[in-house]
Length: 230
Image 1 (cartoon, one colour):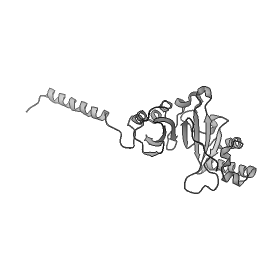
Image 2 (spheres, rainbow, N blue to C red):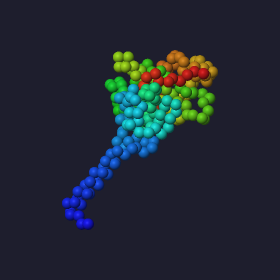
Image 3 (cartoon, rainbow, N blue to C red):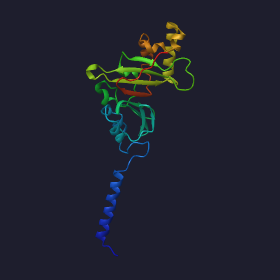
Image 4 (cartoon, rainbow, N blue to C red):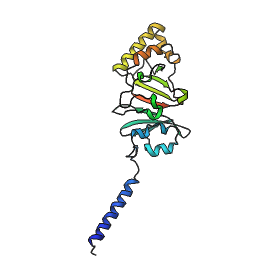
């Protein structure tokens, strides 16, 4: 059977259309986000409170799950969604490998300038400082310090938790200074038992030391978990 040039062109156009339809309805690869999803699409204030199914339609399939926490990878950036009663209650972004956290969709004008490293200084005074461990930590997990900021009630009272891994550089230097100050003021047992996590008297000193330490992760939500004393 011979086809005219017009018929061949029509068949070619039909094949192209069918291919485009299949491409548009293709599902994301296992453990990945849809090709069109960006970090700002997923790590976004509009995602807090949404249904888990809707969140996954944007973020893709979770790579890992740990209880209520589900880890997604979007554009090579690691985002963790905390799912409580089927809805997103908190979002966390690891800021390594060029993964910038734009917080404007969460806290508006209180957010640090986008594109610049986030540090506790950007949130001003009054932050609550805690740490997973400052002495006798062992090698199982890298210790971390945390700075908690809460938005004014008039702005919704959203919480921002800054994580700083204590694995060298400014973070380790700040942790060392904080630990030594508390050792002298309250004793080594106080530090070993992380009693500083249960009171605020050393927060002002910690704020001076950690002010310019770049964060390694940012978590935003309500009722965020806090470090405890032993």
